[in-house]
Image 1 (cartoon, one colour):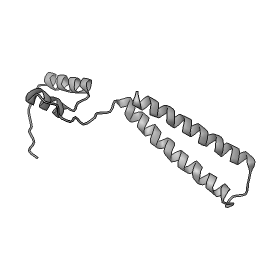
Image 2 (cartoon, one colour):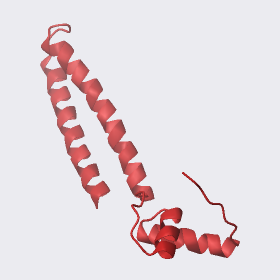
Image 3 (tube, one colour):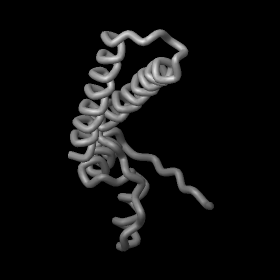
Image 4 (tube, helix red, strand yellow):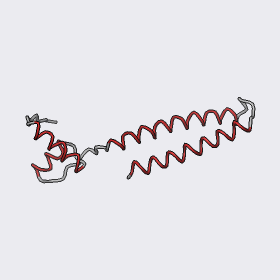
Length: 109
């Protein structure tokens, strides 16, 4: 696919970046839309807070996976039963699920 390189002043570059972000376009999609006058599929540019929240959601998933592995060991008898530990695992799992749902709500706005 052919590409194009253009030179801009600092002010033009800042304006292009600002307007592209404001409308949810990439810079190239905004220029194509302005020049060709039709809608181009813009790559979605996530807000910075969405990036952070998505990272948190990924980390919660990893923690949840570890909790599930511990629960499996208890459930299969690989670790001796201990009701305090089992209740703690259940509480942690519940908290992780709740936090995950809240983070998803924040990401989706």
